Each structure stands twice: as C-alpha cells, then as structure tokens.
Length: 188
Image 1 (cartoon, rainbow, N blue to C red):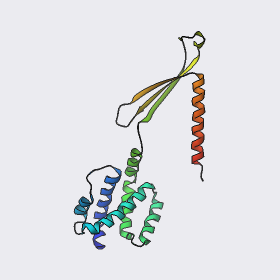
Image 2 (image 1 turned 90 degrees about the vertical axis):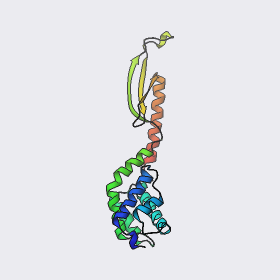
Image 3 (image 1 turned 180 degrees about the horizontal axis):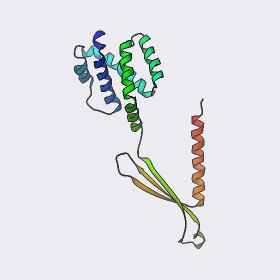
Image 4 (image 1 turned 60 degrees about the horizontal axis):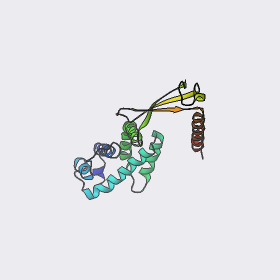
C-alpha cells in the first residue's frame, strides 16, 4: 500500500481537495470522492488513516502560517517520526504549500472576520449654530462618519456627533485600548 500512496500527482490532488474543503468552503468533497478519484486502487479502510494524516499536516501548516524555513523543519520532523511521511511526500507537500500559501492565508483571514468591518472614517469639527439652550451656541462639535460593511456588499453609514466632553471620553477609551494592545503585544 505504501507505494500506492506515493504518487506525487495523486498526493497533490489530495492536498488540493483538502484545501478546497477545509479552507475555501467547498461542499461535497468527501473521503469517498477523494479516494475514488485519486486512490482507486487503495481500499477506503486503508485510505482513511492516510487522509487523516494529510489533513492534520495541512491544517498544522496552515494554522501556524508557516514560512518556508518552518515548513522545512516541520516536514523533516514528520519524515523522521514513526508512522510519519516519506521524503517524497514531504517534497510534494512543500511544493503544494509554496504555491497555495497565499490563497489559503487569505481565505483563513476572510473566514476570521465575524461581521461587518470599518471601510472608511471621516470627521470634521463644526460650531453649533442652533440649540435649545443659548449657551451651547457656537460651541465646537466633532462630527464623525463611519462607513461600515462586508466585502461584496453595499456600505452603511453611521453619523456621530460629539461635544467636547464626549470627545475627551472617547480619547480616554482609545488610550486604554492602545495600552491594552501594547501590553498584549509585548513578548512574554
């Protein structure tokens, strides 16, 4: 069986199928389909462990977003591991990752967006010309317009108005966020 699972074209096709299913959301790519199209001479019972191994390796590489040095070290470790992969399989995986890394990474980034994103922001400072209370006339007002939307969809706009107190509160909160991010980004 080992020789039957060595073919570089079949392994490349298998990796492409796994990537389509796992990272690009293609439905209908089943174990049975991959086995019948790429490894017809291997029984489904023999194919399943091999498929699981390749799926695990591909997911490990993608989730770590491995550069080519990390990939080389990872694949070398996999070839030396008991029940690991062959050096020919490692070469096919390396070639596959080099040609598909960018697309897989972009797909994972797109999948990690929960909801709409900020597409644009514009702001200006105006002076109030009308108010129910005369002392508020001619006080500065910050007006902020946010453009929010998902890629491929039309944007929505949100217009916010802040007086001096609200601007100061917003700046304080942004400073707290910046401080939290800086703390999290410092090496352990």
